[in-house]
Length: 94
Image (cartoon, one colour):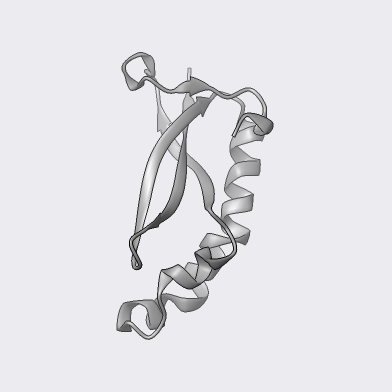
């Protein structure tokens, strides 16, 4: 069975991102919804500002001025027993 790890992404300091594994799901619909939301928010920001971010002309903190965190679910694993994270069956659990 495939499990998808759900990571919470938030600002750490002024220019770094912190990734924290907060849960897992085996529901591909939940996984897709989380990733679509990421792609339309933080993913879009990173894509549009990649060069300016690399040159230091834009800070990632701009994205997080009005949002605390976003989630992503792109890591697939086959074993979750040792990860100590909760089973997510509904997006409202995040």
